[in-house]
Structure formats: C-alpha cells, structure tokens
Length: 312
Image (tube, rainbow, N blue to C red; front, side, top):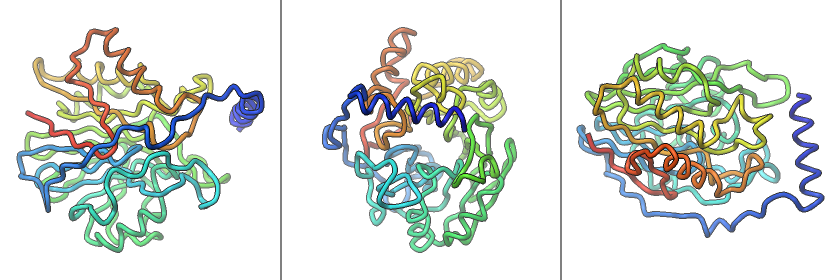
C-alpha cells in the first residue's frame, strides 16, 4: 500500500507540472472489421478476434470462447470515475456469435466487469465459465449459472476442449479489504491438435517454460504488453513489451523444433492504467522483435476488432 501511495503521489506531481505524456484521441487507434465465422468456425480452424484490452473471441474446435470479457466504458466500480475506455470494443455485444466458454483470469475491474458479465449471463445463459479459485462466487452473484473454479495446473474438459489453469504473477482485489482473497491465473485450451495460451494478467515469472513443456506446443500465445510504468512499481505484476517477447521465446524454446507459434499482443491501447504513453507498448514490442531478429510473422499487434486466422 505504501508503494501505491508513493506512485499516486508521483503521478499527481507529474500531472501538476505538465510532465504526463499527452494521449491520442481514441479515433487515432487502429480499427478493423471483424471476420467472425457464424455461428461457429469449422472444427479444424483457429481464429482470434481482439475486442480490446484482454478480451478475445476465440473460435477453435467448433467452439466459441471469450477471454476476460470487458465491454464496460470504465474499469471501475463506479460509472463516473476511474479509467475510461479509449476505444470502443471491436465487436458489439449483440454481434457476438453463440458463446460456449468464458475464461476468466482474475477479478480486477479491467478484466471482470459486472455489466458485461450480467449481459452475457442473460443472453448466453448456457455458456460454461472457468475461473480461478474464489472468483466463482462473484460470477454467480452477477447471474452466471455455470461456473467451474480451478487451481493452478488443474485441468477439465468441456465440449471437446481440454482447459487448464496456469500460474501467473499478479494479485487480486475488488476493494480495499480483499487483496489476494481470490486466485489469478492464465489459461491453456486444447482442441484436437490446436492449442492456445492466454496469459491473463501477469508479470514475468519462471513458469512459462513449464507451461509450454506440460501443455504445449501452442499455436497462439496471447501475452500482455501494457501497463508497465513505472517499472519500480509495476514490474512484479505487469510485463513490459521486452518481457513479453522474452516469455514468447522461453515458451517457444521448449516446443518441438519447427512448430510455428504466433504471439498476439493484448492488455494495451484500451484503458490508461499506468504512466507509459498509450501507443508506446506496440512500438517497444516491435523494436524488441527487430533487436532479437525474430520472424515478423510470429508477432501480431491486432487492430481493435481485427481477426487473425492461425495456420497450422
């Protein structure tokens, strides 16, 4: 808490002295028309559409999956204050295909939004939600009828999918008295021979290689690249773009030689949560990719609403 107070004081000082970086208008951020297969994609296909922040619509194994669904206009417990959305969601809620599975990584407001959960619970009542330990009660309170909680490394099956909760380095809280009262996690999903990894919200940690060894190889890795400044405060809980590239390489190194993996960047460009300029994360990621001489085709920074089809 002392560190949080020091950071807030530092931010206030920068704001009062005009040293906070200016932010672009939301209309300047890239946007694309989604290419969603309705009502579901063919079983052999794998496609991901970036809705914004950490929300993806995944279509794999003939199943429609949402990650950390967040359509709210503020990442906050109230509608009049807190981080506001800079870019509208890439897909409107009423344009979603039938949702079969929802993967929830933790309970922070920028990842678990009450209004969004309630809407999905009403309009996609048959969806099966998966959450880390302790988060299910909140989802149930918001109207979700089917929720399964998992601990790190626990697996379960749903509609032909194999789903596993994976370690992450983060924390949880919805208020001032419940810090770390519930768990946080990442997720892996396997459908036949297609596999994905959704890191959730995480700082760099030593389990990335183990995740790939035990649950890979992954065709698609969704890794966070934003909300990292100042590093003295954010490093334990949020990866910088350079660390996201490192995590991708660590995971790829233990996968079979020649297996093609694609990284999709997330957790940027939607909410102004920390001190770096809004558009800086993808610029730093691209610079790190060039520095390491990595294949440009292995890294995707999607426009809001853009769909990427991941080939075998």
